[in-house]
Length: 198
Image (cartoon, rainbow, N blue to C red):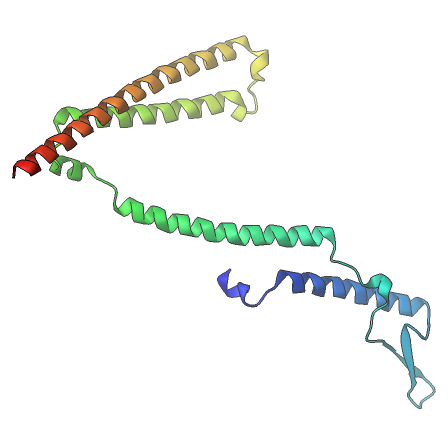
């Protein structure tokens, strides 16, 4: 995309495409009717006259580019800038992934086994939530033979049960995260106290 930016100007491209359309329409008009304002005739000497298009197009054919063309070019511009933004985000995510803590890093920090167990529980709950969400999507009509949910009371009841379990799991996750936050604050305070004593 960056290589094309120096070569392609959307406005000039639109003008060129519109100009091609105007030249085609003008050529058709000169084939059907001959007027001194539209063509210039030159005698070639062999009894035939050669007709050429004049350099200036008639005013009725000089117009702005087609609105469809303008919207297409605008969308192409948005896609190009969005593509660059996505590439920047991918690079940033790759940098952040390199900085991500692993299990060995957590153990090296001296976290308690209970805290590590809670992290594992949190990961298991998040995976379970993901499975439940996928199950709900499948139940809601991914299968072509499934009836519409409003026509099937049993399916609605199952969805409500799944929703309740999801709410319970979200509440458990909220409790675990608050516990993790308090424990990490305590660890930071302990680290500051031990550093100040040194």
